[in-house]
Image 1 (cartoon, rainbow, N blue to C red):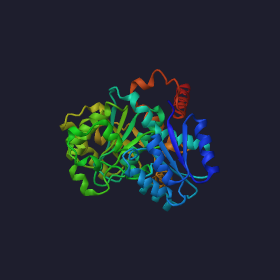
Image 2 (image 1 turned 90 degrees about the vertical axis):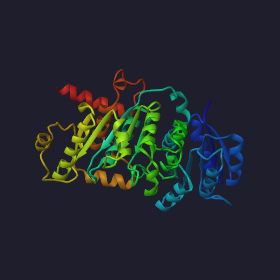
Image 3 (image 1 turned 135 degrees about the vertical axis):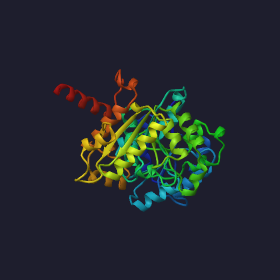
Length: 404
């Protein structure tokens, strides 16, 4: 049964253009000419997604979005704003009103179809994934701040999502000041704070999904609270329960961890199948990494699940790779190059380098890394319908093998 989409626009030409593009993708479409008409129609047709213009008589698209969020039937329905307004201020208005996505006119039909597909993915795909699976939990951690753990977590989560097209979550456990949603340009309409006051036994997968944010890559984000004081209500037991619940439903969970060994951090580390310990090539970071490894040994974490990641956060005169490996008595698994021209604009735009089009060398690095971190069952046999990301990774692997 095709998904039902309600298109709200007072301009009949624009309305028809959107309907044509959606019908070409196989969706069942319905239309409304005003906000008031849309509020009546949603009760009648129960759409899976709503696409609304902004400039309409009597009630604009932002007010319509606010009212849809107040209705029980559409409180959690995906909503896209489709408008000619392209300023940052207008986009902020849309997200603050409760929109899940914001797209400007004129639009490319293929991009509209892709965005709709991502917004609907969790609506259409979740029933098929309700059987229990054993998802892989990847923790990104450092005792020293400011060396790129959140950037790495965001790139790996979205990279895994676009590589395999399966359930992938980014869990922000930097509860007092997490930026995972910002890294992906997602509005903080729902966060961990929505789970904070609930007893653990009342938190199930469906509830967690309702308070998560959808990203166009196909990943979802459980974002850190808006306010630091809300973090105090989130306990280690609650974090462990959320991770355990989600790993039975999603193939990959990437944890963005704070720079400490608090109860919530330990809940993430204890449940991790792989720990990426990030350090920069300088003495303070090296010391922090050594301390972290000592704690890991004390906690009896298996040595083989810990991977060292060297991130060049400055241009030159850092410690040599061999010096770091000798000091830590461990080999470095991944090296990220100094790339401020890629990372800083990516953060400001909310577009991780792994999603850049056309793909850059840095995007290729993250794609290959995501592939290396993937579950063995995803490597063989290859997917029946490989994603563009998978095809790129496979081509690079073939090239490397040919050179051997």
